[in-house]
Length: 270
Ligand SMILES: [Fe+2]
Image (cartoon, rainbow, N blue to C red; front, side, top):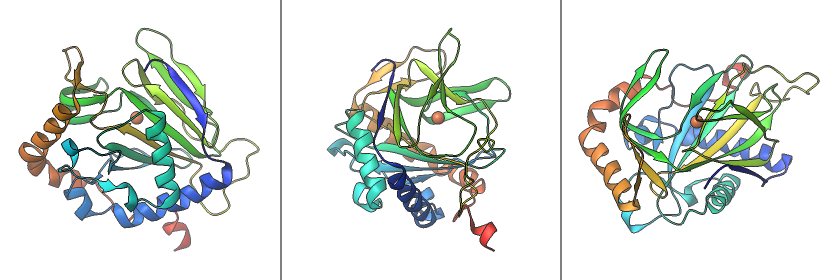
């Protein structure tokens, strides 16, 4: 694909239902056992917002059956429906998707410009980004805004060598964009939107869920080399190699960053 597009897929009530389901899914599925199995991902890097991620076996294929992931039927109903619609919108027919959930409270952010991807071997270079020695870059990403009572009006897309542009996205809209052409970011600190009714039952001002393919329409990603299109089987093979060769020695470092069973309002209710 090239560029980006926006499509409304849920009304506000459906979004709030989906939030309840996402929170329940995180409580049950974001745990040590699933992280070790690489069905859930520890995406906690000390950022002020809460991030969770999961591998989903959808649309599925023989090449990816042996890789970890939740089946689509393990997702609660409206999250399942949103996942189906996002995959349909991205035109995915094979393989797995990587699904992430972002919960932003006041003072969360900013999120620096980055490409999404599965990084198998990388180093974070403080102040200079990320050196990726081996990874997979999905060709496209979709993000659904489920709630936004914050001052952030959308997602900022930055094409290479061009100025960033803010793409306004409303609640219930699915933004799909080219993850080869654009880096994406949330450049501002999250503040309550002036005049917005504060959420009655939650401290989460902004709530998003996103999807990107793990194998279909993906590229071999290593710094200093041009991206190289991968067949589904090749991407699946890279995931298998990572799980066999690298993941066992990385598990403990990932788990050490995790705070499992995170409920956004547990502290408030306590
Ligand atoms: Fe991202």
